[in-house]
Image 1 (tube, rainbow, N blue to C red):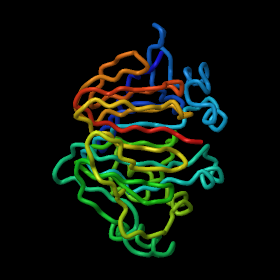
Image 2: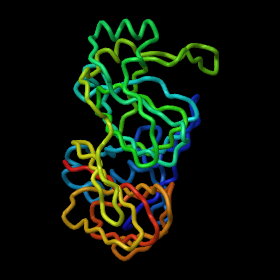
Image 3: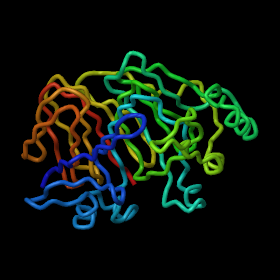
Amino acid sequence: MNFFKFTPLLKTLIWGTESWQISGVPGNETPCTDNGVTKSLNDLVREQKGLLVGEANYRRFGDEFPLLIKFIDAHQDLSIQVHPTDEIAHRQGKPRGKTEMWYVMDSQPTATLYNGLKMQITPDQYKDMVEHDTICDALARYNVSEGDCFFIPAGRIHAIGAGCYLAEIQQTSDVTYRIYDYGRRDKDGNLRQLHTKEAAESIDYTVLDDYRQQYTPAKNEGQLLVECPYFNTAVYDLTEPMTIDYTELDSFVILIGLKGEGTLTVDGEKVPFRGGETILLPATAQEVRAEGSLKFLETYVLS
């Protein structure tokens, strides 16, 4: 096939919902239909190898798909958290760390999020602020709206706030260390688990002036948002037909529908496409023609 559409996994959590659009996380693999047969994403990788993910990516990642794609709808604030780097995760007995990004979609007017430190603190000050429930005072907080984009490299403290609706692109990893959770309790009445020691080992204390990704929105051309060792991501906001050439790209491509509707023609095979849908193009895809009023993210991995 020239493209794959997967059945999302919908997860209801204490703070809202996640829709796992494309996932190879063991036990949470998204299924699709390939020539009349239902297969998981990792089934496809094992069968097609470099033809699906790209030859260099297959040498790097093997039979595990390297990215996890989610839509996140936060009804309450998520916990203050951090993710380890690959190196730290390995030392902690985890398979890999987690670097990710957020693209804010049509969110509530009151939506906010935390991303990064706004002041320089020491590990001892961090520990004291966690113990006294003041860690949020050290974090950069943003009012957000559609089109805002944030990169969250491993080690950066962050949290999605109530009212946010966003697309998340991340390494295939479910390693999250909770730093602070507002004293919330789980369904059994117990305080939710914190990961104080693991988090303390993972934090990058670098302070930046601004944690938003800076780009200039434009119609009918790709705008680069994030370029890192784990993914490259661009946004397209189309009001007229556009052809995207992938002949020189040795990677799969994921197209994440943000809003609008139209069609994609992948090497001559046409498929409807709209906001809320996600499509995986194999590394063998040569050309995509997008038609209609469409806004979407494009992401891939360059090894």
